[in-house]
Length: 121
Ligand SMILES: [Cu+2]
Image (cartoon, rainbow, N blue to C red; front, side, top):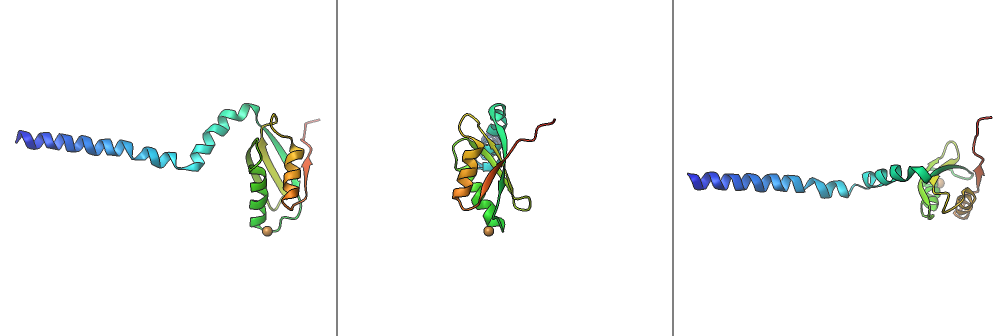
């Protein structure tokens, strides 16, 4: 009888051990979570630029524009709005300028210009 309960405890430990270990890899492989945390940490030096983008006609255009921005060194996040013909970019001003981002989008085939920052008068 003692042997059986002993095995039962070992079995329970093994199962709970597996239960604790399994969720870790599944969390680590979620790219959304992995990206979200560092973005907030680095928020201090990060600025937001708005680009006006011409020539986008469908959702895949926004993807092309977004990818052309995201591959630039210093761009943290890029949001492209088809209906507003805008790209909102979170970037590190120590690494690149809004004009460089506009040039990259223009090279990708969509004429982009930097929208000046709106400052309260
Ligand atoms: Cu398109």
